[in-house]
Structures are given as structure tokens and as C-alpha cells.
Image (cartoon, rainbow, N blue to C red; front, side):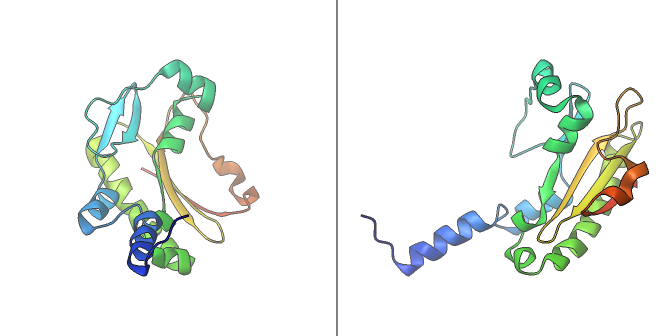
Length: 158
């Protein structure tokens, strides 16, 4: 049997509701460190210095580099703030600004590459992600069929 006081319950609740606990971590969301590994552009997580990926595993699980980038390099607004969990449209407004910031940072860090920065809005969450544009790979999201998607979508090409 386990007994917890209110203080412990509040502490645990706060710890697990938000991934980002202080303003310094939010800076990494706004202006992340992007790294290139095996021709993939990824968000550097924590203080990883030597990021290694197994390309064979990527192809098997994600189909190509584009799918891998889009799956790995994203953030959910509900992970950033409890407010966005209660008020999803505020998360959407925040995500639109975040999308612009990521687009700017990607172009600064990798001026010779082109990217799609993608925002998707479901009823309760907004997700921002990106991937590099590659001639030999299909887009992660089919822009020609953007109206066929059930969720709200914005695609910014930079």
C-alpha cells in the first residue's frame, strides 16, 4: 500500500504533465539545436553530442530519411504547457509562431537545404514537425491532397 500527501501528488503531477519545466528548456523548444546525422536533420535532444543512427533500421521502420525526420523532429504543444491541454486553440496560436521560428533557424543553420515545416491540429493538440526536401524521396505529407486530411494542416516550405 502506498500513501501520498498532497504536496507529493502536486509534485508528481507537475513533473509528468509538462516535458519542459523551466524557461531555459523552453528556449530549446523555440530555438533548438539542429544537427545533421547520416544526411538527416534532427533536433538535438538533451546534451547528446554523438548522435548515431542505424540507417538500415530507419529504412525498415520509417521507409526513408524523410519519414524518420518527420517522426523524430517534432513537438506536441500539450507537452509544453498545461494551458495548451486546457485551451488547444492557444496551443495552435503558439505553434504557428514556433513554426516560423523553426523555419528561420533551419534556413540559418542549413542554407543549402530546403525543408517543409508542418503544423497539424487535432481537436486537442497541435504538433509542429519538419523534414528536409529530397528529390529522391516523397514528401511526408502530400500537399496536393491537403484537403483530404481530417486534421487541420499548414505546410511552410523554406
